[in-house]
Length: 151
Image 1 (cartoon, rainbow, N blue to C red):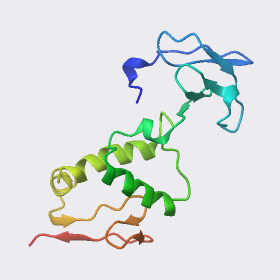
Image 2 (image 1 turned 60 degrees about the vertical axis):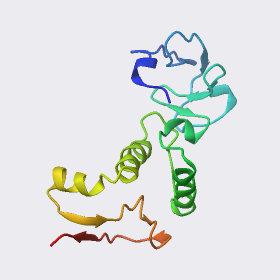
Image 3 (image 1 turned 120 degrees about the horizontal axis):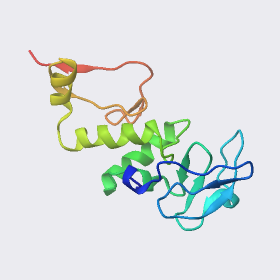
Image 4 (image 1 turned 45 degrees about the vertical axis):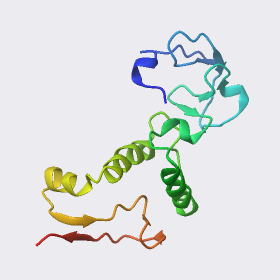
């Protein structure tokens, strides 16, 4: 995963090319327009990322996530079967932020503390539902969410 310390503050964009956003990289690729495409002509050969004037996307989704243990990857694969669209490989992906932050809370048993401290909700246990996918029920849950509140 490329952090902000690995990226240039500004990239050069011309009518026909876009510079790789990684510091000290001089690679330029053909400029994308309108719809983002994962094609070799838009990929930095050094960093293996697809580049557009406004974003970049990793070749591999897993390059943009922190939690990659077998149980994390198994859960992510289960979710992908139900999730309609994923931009988890994009540098500015809300999906990647959601996964990285909430998977950390869940894996470290901090979800109930987070609910209490940040949202003032007291819960004895809570099920984290990623993009409508319930791990407990092994399916999507529509628009309902349950929290078991402490007494």
